[in-house]
Image (tube, rainbow, N blue to C red; front, side):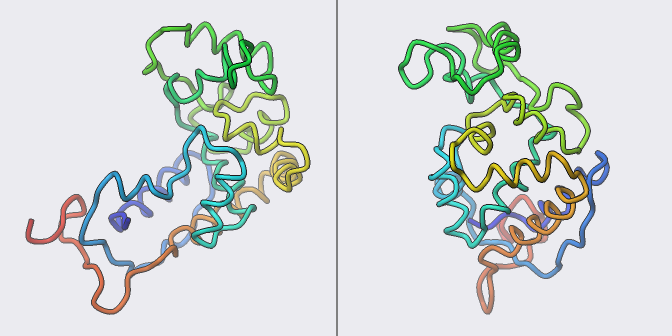
Amino acid sequence: MQLPISIPFEAESSVSLSGGPSWNVLLGRRDGLTANQAGANISIPSPFDTLANTTSKFSAVNLDTTDLVALSGAHTFGRSQCQFFSQRLFNFNGTGSPDPTLNTTYLATLQQNCPQNGNGSTLNNFDPSSQDTFDNNYFTNLLTKMGLLQTDQQLFSTNGSSTISIVNSFANNQTAFFNQFAQSMINMGNISPLTGNQGEIRLDCKKVNGS
């Protein structure tokens, strides 16, 4: 699956304008000749994935554990619908109880926003303290069990995981996070570039040339 080349520029601008780092977006990457949701869903991590599955998906495209943690830090801003984390609030893994890695005060807030059998489309901030600012609060939130998605919190709450030390590092050093995030975005932009006669430079980023 190849995304339009405008996407990396939009990502850099939104991060930079929200207080985060900037980086040089490499030029010359071609667009794909097809675009479909099924193709994208093959490798994109799910909010319900285990840490092992997420790590495997990143590794398959030559992104390592540090890239995984740094890129997850994009959840320092943005929002998610209840349907993507409500399984943590009332009956986690069929236990009849909430996810034990959720801060109890935060849990109560989320249960109020996302009641059982409620509207799964209700939006919740990834970062309740600075939802519109790109900073390292995502990582300090994980230290206090306030990661919104299961895939967020398990970066810190999975016993023995190598991700724990990386989360601690970014939580204690915003500059280190910013530097690594910029590099990891470049790394992600270099996944499987089209070469030779493959792909095209679209005249209109939302559609294939000639369509």
